[in-house]
Amino acid sequence: MKNEPASDMQFFVLVAKHGSLAAAARAIDLTPPAATKRLATLESRLGVRLVNRTTRTLSLTSEGETYLQHASRILAEIKEMEDAVSQGRSAPRGLLRVNATLGFGRTTIAPLVSTFTARYPEVEIQMEVTDRPVDLVESGFDLAIRFGALPDKRLNARKIMSNRRFLCASPGYLERHGVPKSLADLANHRCIIHRQNDDAYGIWRFMHQDHTEIVKVHGALSSNDGDIVLGWALDGHGILIRSEWDLAKYLDSGRLKIVLPEFDLPAADLFVYYPSKRNQTIRARAFIDFLVEHFRGPQDSQNGGGKRRERKGK
Image (spheres, one colour):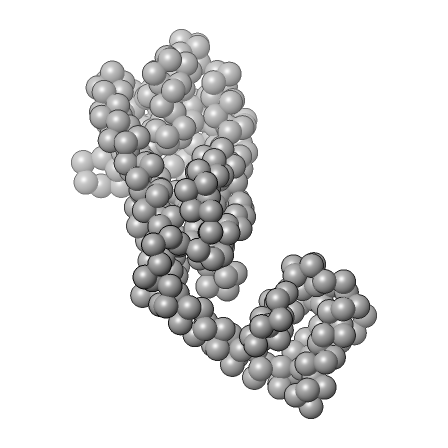
């Protein structure tokens, strides 16, 4: 870590966040003994003990809690000041921490990060992919890219792509088991279940003529990985719910077909979430605008293509 006036505060905030000197040391490329010495030097300068340490655990003293509270506030104010000063710069710069979903983050967002970095070489991006939404405020991410709405009302959001969801199955499965004519028919079909976060298992919700219909489905196959369940549907093992982003090429090629298109499913629109618009950095705004610019074309074509597929499904 650089020798800056705020470096001791940054170091201690990292220690408190990780709950471990060794983990904090790894985060800033220090050896564990060097991190221990640095904490001891900070405590000696302040004349108080900031943490209680045992061989396995680390906890903050009351003085440590006070130091952490003020250090977090001061560092946030320093960041806000630097961002305000740099607003006039023509090129974004500095660190941007991005969170995204596992599969989509790996296959789609990561290549876009590569392109964005080539355009703005002064921006340093730390990207992390997770299967579940993260707490942006607690984890320190600048933004997250997620399908669907997040429950945290503290966040702001910008939609970057519309993305409807459909029931689909392979032609081979439909030939063997028949095409469902109503939601009630799903009870007699093999349904492939994609387990996501805390959603109720095997409960599918539809909108039809301004009211909600709930269907309990059953099937021999389920997974928490979207690519896995999609592969099973392509192999003819059952009916699946998937978004048009994932389905487009398979619908166009005929490997999958939409069933019951008159029943709407909750959308899986793509959003960028961020903690505060007022304190948003120029690099975060540039990255969000870059994403919107990239997805604007696919969004328009997918909306049109989705309508065509809906008519064909009928």
